Amino acid sequence: FGAPIFVVASGDARGATERARRLGSLIHCEPSEWTVTGADGRPKDMIGCSFWDLDGYFFEVNEVVGVRVPG
Image 1 (cartoon, rainbow, N blue to C red):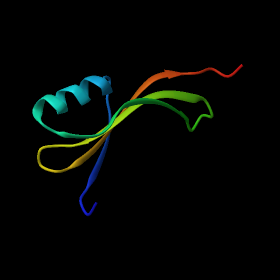
Image 2: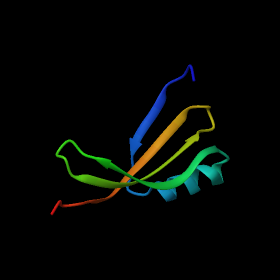
Image 3: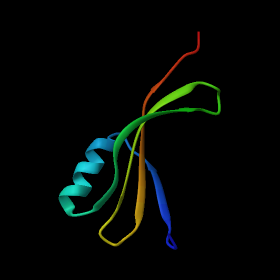
Image 4: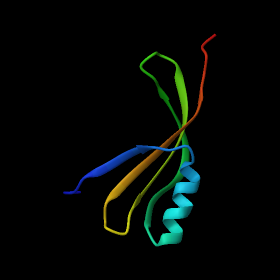
């Protein structure tokens, strides 16, 4: 992109997207669910979204919604 990309943790990724939309931000990716394996080997369920803010900076917003216990 040629500019900084901000990756942030949130307690409400869906809400962050709606607030960004109301303010006029360009939404790149609607909130979607995905899973990643954490450093401890346990799967983490996530919700992620991304958008450009009004100054043109790109934000990736991620929310941990659950950590699974193997077994």
